[in-house]
Image 1 (cartoon, rainbow over the protein chains, first blue to last red):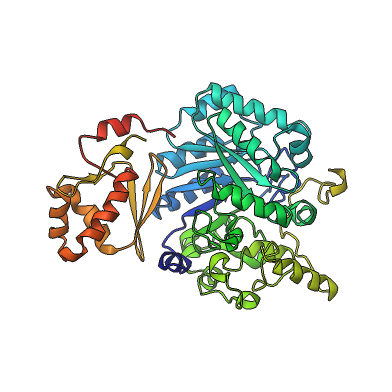
Image 2 (image 1 turned 135 degrees about the horizontal axis):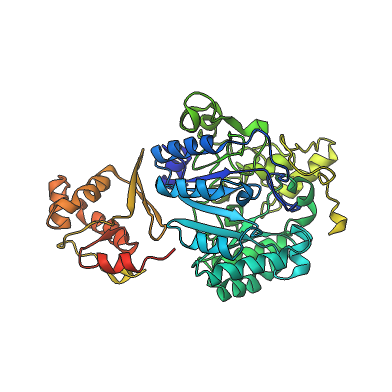
Length: 374
Length: 105
């Protein structure tokens, strides 16, 4: 690691990349949803509690927050809290499925000083996208994109989770983003939330990952949220910090105010505390037991003898955890196949116990989605 | 972004862009530009001091001097400041009006 990543690994006064999920409510039931969203949780933060969190983030000089969910625009106070954030100097980047971006809302968003939008699309055609996000969603997202363009919102981000079925469409995504003057953002599919069940059949193959690595290397302007750092073991590092930022530069506040090490580990084992506790979010970030331990140098474990450990750091903690691997095992998508081998051994020994999410908000009857239905 | 054509000149007066915020961190500071959304690391407390005080100095070199920097370190500081100028974190007053007008999201 370079000196900078060493310094970042040791922790910062405040997070760089804070994800804040505003609700578990969602009108979609995407098969890869990292938070198993669907139904609103009765304990979600009130408007006043939300504002108190914003006050604390402003005090900590958190420059911007990544708002997610659920579908954040389903909160009746969505615009009120966005406006409160911007007024306090906390920039807003929010992820949306686009369902609530009508002409009027697009104009309202375009008039705001510091609001960035990430709109999710998981296929360049109806067939590919709707298999993941649900029937009719492709057409709906394109309509939302049209509204943003008509409202002259400016550059929004088109956000795609890479799956086995859509990873080979990257050129078409780039063309689509260009057509709208949008930025393209590709992120790694992690087996979190409802993705725990679907990941094994839908995550890109190792050959596809190698192709993606070369494609990204040639396009440093494509945003990735630094999520493909496990691919940096293939050679030249991808742009970005190339480290697991959980509890170091990244964390998550969920809709009920629980704080987790990263957006992809909604599980009690990675819960650092609640903003309702004395000291609130700042105390958790600065001194919780979990975050303090994540800032210790990590044990390279099974990866210690691999010459590429410095490049990938052993990969993604969430991906290991939800596939049942120990945290010092190789990443399940290790480019040298060590992760696949570790998963095979785990299966063979009968020890493959995959954790489930601690708080599943999927709508009844939709908790287990048969992949064959895709 | 317009100021990318602006080149750092150590004899000129510079100041932080009005939409840049600095946050103290153990290694120095994080700088964030609310206009172009860029984030950068100021990886030395001395660099933070220079950046914070340069608006009050007639030139960047004068700010180095006032901060008590050993002249042998000046080239490294000029390089760091050049990249801050390229990212529009620092402006000279002749460019401010243009930069602000053309900021986009």
